[in-house]
Length: 358
Image (tube, rainbow, N blue to C red; front, side, top):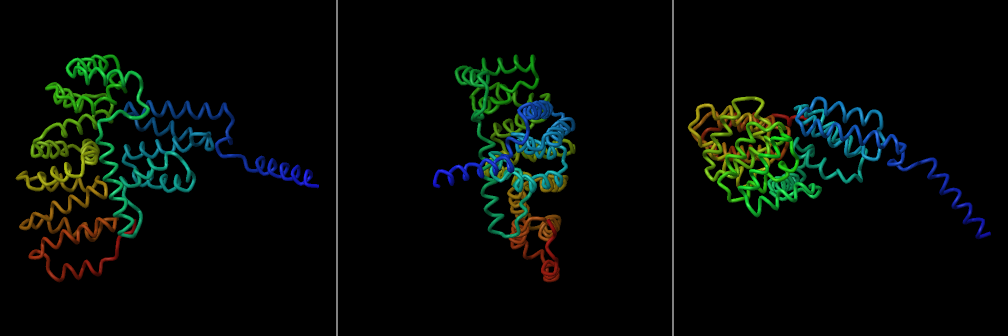
């Protein structure tokens, strides 16, 4: 009897497995291979800065093979591609779907980081402050010059050359870029070049920031070049000059996000203190493309301008209209430094203003 029960249990278990196959096995091996090929093609296009065609490849992979063994990875790459295309609302929608469809994915932390960069959706101050803390930790990680865990052998060897002889390593990097302008080994070692004591490091990074084939390479090179420069006033001037062109806004935003907490606060303070008559145009662009942390810190910097009516207007607008509660709270704190410029009527209007919908 016991043996018959055991057999019956095994039959039932097999029946359940057949009726509900594991999500990873829903596609055939051939289909999984095709899905991986589409992702690889999309990834190459992404690294080359061809985001429009990269989006098509990632979408094709997800449309044809929605249950492949790496649909979560394809979804994550589609999210970051949409960010590059500045289609932020579509990226947010994909993030919400990802959290429902792939709760146990190893890409979950990466998707959560993108959620932070695009603005938190939670309504509690405690939740958003926790996300700000995570965002600051992410900026520290992005600013690290360490090699990524999946770095190639070429990346490791090039790093060893840079560490042994920085001048020779930078010469090798230039040589590799002539053969392949998107060389991944050079990209992975921009942090090592930044960390070297070579006088050639800053000219190399600045040259790459303006001429690299890949937008991602230009962004990271620009970040390390600004970080290499100890004169944060000069860095602030460079950022404001770059912000005159719309296509540079995402590069500046990413550079500020990659800086450590103290570094980006120092640069923001220099921008706010600047005598540049167009500085508020730059401030508004930084705010528009900034993360929760960056927007909050920018408001704190603007609050130091106690005799500038543009500062009061900027802070009040953030207090009324920012989509994130934590940033609106930061704006209200900034107003405490503007007591003489804020009248009771303005505060009453703020009291009556309904919170904006996310």
